[in-house]
Amino acid sequence: MSKLYVFGIGGTGSRVLKSLTMLLAAGVKINADEIVPVVIDPDYAAADYTRMVKLMQDYSKVYNRIDHNNYNKNAFFGTKINLEIIPSVRMPLHNTENANFQTYIGLPLMTDENGRHNANYALATMLFSEKNLKTTMEVGFKGNPNIGSVVLNQFALSDEFKNFAASVGQDDRIFIISSIFGGTGASGFPLLLKNLRSIDDTYSGCENVKNAIIGAISVLPYFDVAPDNNPDEAKHSEIDSATFISKTKAALSYYERNMTEANALYYIGDNINKQYKNSEGGTTQQNDAHFVELAAALAIVDFAGLTGLSTSNGKAQNTIYKEFGIKEEAKEIAFADLDSTTNLNIKKALTTFTLFCKYLQEQIWDSYKNQPWAKDHKFDENFLKSPFFQSELKDLITSYLQWLKEMSTNVRAFKPYDLREKKKNVFSLITGEIPAKVVTLKQDYALFDDYLNTKQGKIKTDSTTEQIFVELFYNAIDELVKSKFRM
Image (tube, rainbow, N blue to C red):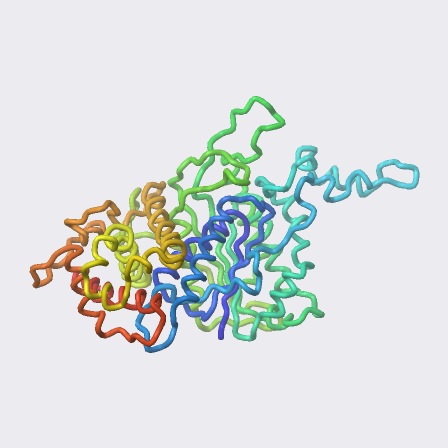
């Protein structure tokens, strides 16, 4: 069983992990048996983190309800997300809550026997500005990688890191997500990579970690934040998007000289940026989903399938570098704007799952009483009001459709579908494409039900109701997509 450990550093890490979860829910294939998510972020209240964890928990509940045997055709929820190795999905960072940086490093204690400031104090005050020293850390490092590089070193000493190391097998891989223009990601990526390659030799599994195939993506600026005009200097935000580019250039220069430990390094960013509300973190930091995050998640899929990578004695051999591009400069992207390889990876899976979600949201309550596919398998009112349908599955499909909507209204927009409810034109949902005609008198959701009825007699019934339900819908929609969209 091969595992792919995906470390998400900071807010960008959580948002890319969210996009990866959506891809896996839709059935996008990845060359790994399990995904093990690990977040490194001092911002314990971050809304992006809490939304991502809730999504993964819903995904895992659905995954555990259905079978994953070779004779089942269903690809939805096809890869296990392992939430047992790191149950909180987070590496802990201690002594960062309700504390500023000078307290964390013990600046007031840097004195000699006479109580006077010593050489350590002089060095600390030379390296860090007064503003740095007074910075609180409970919502992250606020664009200060110099602070993050000191604080983040501690995670390698945690029990969670030791448990992670002990769980890594010889064929497992590691991937790291980070932004390069903030504080947490820019400082966390180099430190994590260093700690993986020079892991303590006393840790169980240390050799597997040290010699693992490691990939990473550095996310360059792809959004702006509004200026903070708060006249109160004490409450003024330290996040300033005017510094994003200069910080990126400085970090890239460092990476060029020093970042040779990764086997594969991906870069992505965008020069068309939406301006978000200025939030330093916590419950108010909840950015809309963005296509850059989806593309970054696809880097994880790409990395899992790479061959010919090797590591010897903790040293990556022949690092490869990759970027992501679209065909044409467009403010609104559809499938036609993506490379053929990207479309091959995601178009059919996303379309199949989108139709699944739209049927459950728009039509199932109108069909279940009269259709053979529902009556024969007892997909009745009790089933539709069960925790599986009402909580686990419904919450996930609601999040998925919201994810698509957020990307469609962001800048740059990704709008592959028209998600409006159109019961009389159900299959005209792919942007720029006209669905093929099927030789039948039935149309739209009536045609959908017809495919479900055709497939329902061929589904194995020696399984759970939940498994039969998901398997039936996948088989029917798979045929629909082939007929209507030639995919």
